[in-house]
Amino acid sequence: MKLPFTTEQFLEVFRLYNETVWPLQIIFYFIAIYCLYAIFRKTAFSDKLIFLFLVMIWLWMGIVYHIIFFASINTAAYLFGSLFILQALVFVYDGLIENRLMFEFTGSIYNYAGAVLVVFGLAVYPVLGYLLGHRYPDSPTFGVPCPTTIFTFGMLLFLKSRIPYLLAAIPFVWSLIGFTAAFTLDIYEDTGLLASGVITMTLIIIKNSKLKI
Image (cartoon, rainbow, N blue to C red):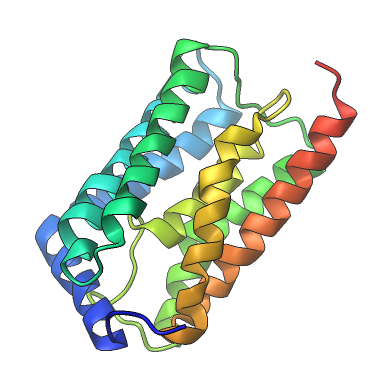
């Protein structure tokens, strides 16, 4: 598929983004780790705090990464940004307004798969990128779509009850879109994005089919 920008232009967007927002990448990273910790050390506010972070990070990706930075080389970024903003609103409705979804570690296969995806998004993805020659600041960091979407998939698999398909729909669509970077732009670490989307949607379908409520 012919893209309207080159690999060099794509990596330049990451450089400009990373240098502009530094050190927010580190702050996002530690908040994400705290969200994972909050699943294991529950408080009365754990679920809302996790959803608040998901709302914030998806708004950030939609507005800051896509619309402000990525749109400079690809006008499709305005559509992508709108989808990410819509995903943030889905998190607001299901996680904060409806207030019926809880994150919990129950020792299920869904939880273990979720933990693997969280670790992949936070740690394995950047290490793979480094080994493949994508060095900071010309590299995707946590807080941009691909590693953060993998993290989001992982967090969804910690939800205790049935997982609304709408929660995972836009991240899954992005896993298909973002995967194109793996071979068209030589961002081979993004093969993990597609794999995480397929794994998560498969497990959500299996889990929801087993739960009646």
